[in-house]
Amino acid sequence: MSKNKHKTAHFFNSRKVNVFALFVLLSLLFSILTKLSKDYTQTIRFEIEPKQIPEDKLILKDSLHYLDITLTTYGFKHVRYFLAKPKIIIQIGNLDKDDKQFFWTREKGLSHIISQFDPNVIVDAINPDTIRFKYDQSYVKMIPIKLDSDIQFETGYSNIDQITIEPDSVKAIGPKSLIDSISSIDTNTLKIENVKNDISEKVDLKLATAQNQIRYSHKSIIVNGKVDKFTEGSVEVPVLVKNIPKDIKLNYYPKVVSVVYYTSLSNFKNITNSSFIVSCDYNNIVDGNSFLVPQILDIPEGVKGVKLGTNKIEIIIVQ
Image (tube, rainbow, N blue to C red; front, side):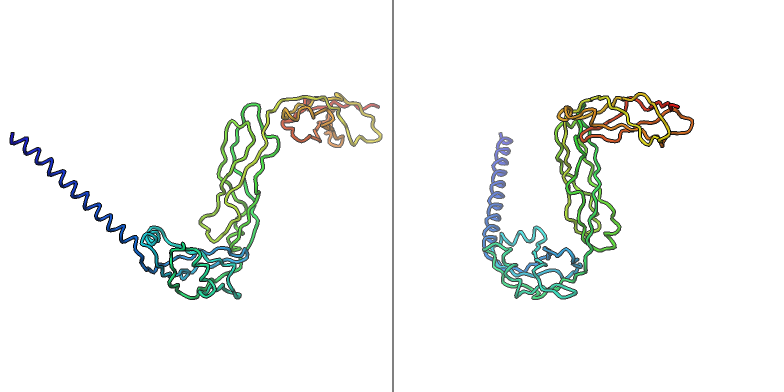
């Protein structure tokens, strides 16, 4: 019986401890909330983030690019500046400059700084009163993009036209010594399978992140392609022989060859034997041979996988 009483007393004592701890926690939380709801004045160092930099200018890194801003606001507002590194934006293109540096002054830039804070945040002071942004001339170069892709079409489907990328080149701005070493920019690999609809995919560029002195006009591209169901077709096309000498009479056969091709269903009705030109050049005849090699000189748009039914045109010189 005494053992049961001991267990009961232990249970109630534990409950009392838990309730006490809960009250202590709530009291502490209430105290923190009360303090954070009051106004505080604090000087915080803001890292400057340059924006609107002229394309032909390169801002040189400087450890003095910061502002010490004294703010008065609720404690809640101050907390955010300690959770993440605070930054303030300065529009470089709006500043006065000479041939070596841009100048930010508190007198001219105060209103823009204040506009970046909430209305209930009071800006009491800003130091220093002047910041100099040294710059150098930037080099601008258009660099072509190389698409890295692995596109697998559903059986019977293919792209109607060439796969295109937009844009096909990017503008790089930075030191000439760095940009001159870049001949092209690769994309991340675009891998898609069983494609039977039009392609429109965003692909990121593999930018030289280590070269953070270079600015790029784009960080990604769009890959586009028109896709349709394809079918095989065949037409009989007459063979032309050109550059026959005037003193030679020539006979040849076959005079008509089959041309096998693939095209989209929507384009199939537009393909006729006049869509292709098959020709042989007498000047390409090899001594001792009695045949010419036919070539397809004209292939209509939207047609791929073209091949000839024969690769020899027999010739007979008529005396």
